[in-house]
Image (cartoon, rainbow, N blue to C red; front, side, top):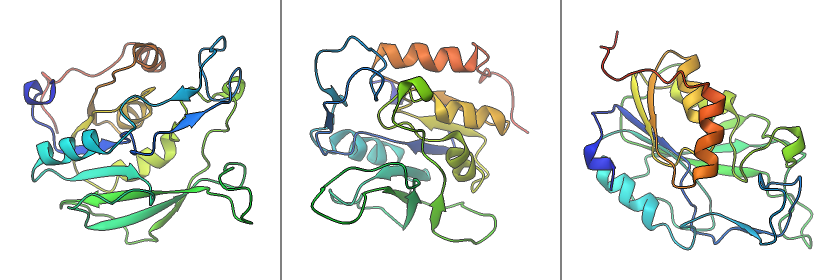
Length: 208
């Protein structure tokens, strides 16, 4: 486990497996970065919330921003819940209902959040579902949303333990923050590295 070996951080921002056994049968240009895939697209560790809960427990008193879903129990330390409204172009869900499932929950844990007191509904357009239009991960988050979340805390050193294709790293870099990202799937690590163009900031330098 890498977490105990990491340098100190001030904030954990993560989009962990939700515990819903996500699986999509959409191949080719939709969701899947490997266009020759002959199996459903899934998320490693998504059978339960064990990873999410472990990281929050490890974080102890650190502030945590955690994406999730109403389909499973919220983290026990949740202090506030934000709703990310992803735009009208997303959402299939139960086709017998006249509403799309185009929202996600964001759990706020811990203290130190600041800034303008605005709405708890955050409206940021999600990447469209086609890889040909820029989507590189089935649960990819827009950099603009992640930037707005990071900006609500003074944390200078951020950890994303489920970094995916590196959107949190990009957001942190744009804001002049330092960020560590951990990812289990090698194909996504390569995408994240390409997005950052190997310009991740070193932790040896002191903060402001």
